[in-house]
Length: 334
Image (cartoon, rainbow, N blue to C red; front, side):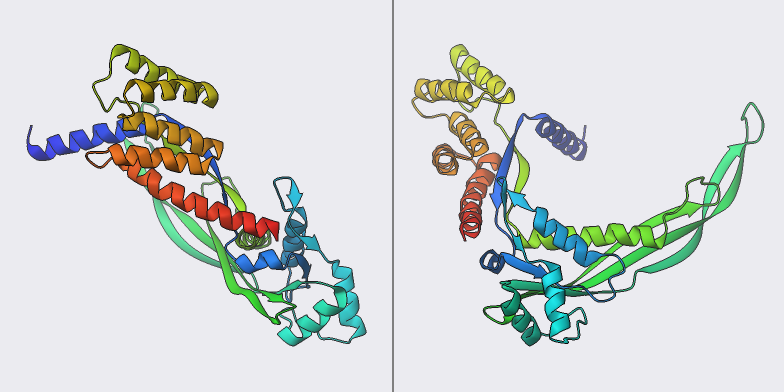
């Protein structure tokens, strides 16, 4: 076996083993991308111009429904109040209302921020191509007949300009143009029908609304963290059993029991096993105890002689999680 084949084989084995490694689910609180929104949670949504897909209504509904830790994040000012002021003041509502007008309206209706927008016309572009097919020439299928079928690729797109204005400061909190598109294919021998442009546009508007809300709000992110399953020292039979049992309890979600065995493993190895400290850090991270997790990850890091990828990643990750949770909690507290 030459070196290239050997290297490929070893890499493949490592990849397979890492894919089968035991992992723990972690749920982490992360801050809103647009931090200033936390100070302007009393929001009004204006009628968007050219809004044939109901984007403004979708955004308003999502803002009203958004909850985190079972608490509402926004207070929505009635759009009827907004429209009433527009009508009484004889203001031209062109969708993207100018900043001065927005501030005047916001002060009258008691909103801290107003979201306005302009929705582009949904586009649909079709292109054609051919795909090679085959079928049996006879019942025994000893020979094949090749032929081509005509196919169509359909690309539907939608764009929207969105703007959020701070009433007290009189400036723009967020402004961007969001674009979404979806691609469909259909061949002449396909029984499935392509969705209409209008149907796809509704889905794209839903996607734009979701992305917009995601930027404005703190949220939870789920990911998985790998455990270390192999001893890093010359474990005794009893120590190997402690590691094995702790991993079993972690897999079953019994973190309290896993902790007991990991502490015993740490004590029995005279606090020299980075595997025990690292796995204990993972348990604490999964429980949301980031400061304790950080301590255990740093203990594991100090015991490393050669770099261990999982421990390096954990040290970087836990510091980021602590900072992000601090920012998110500050946003929630405003």
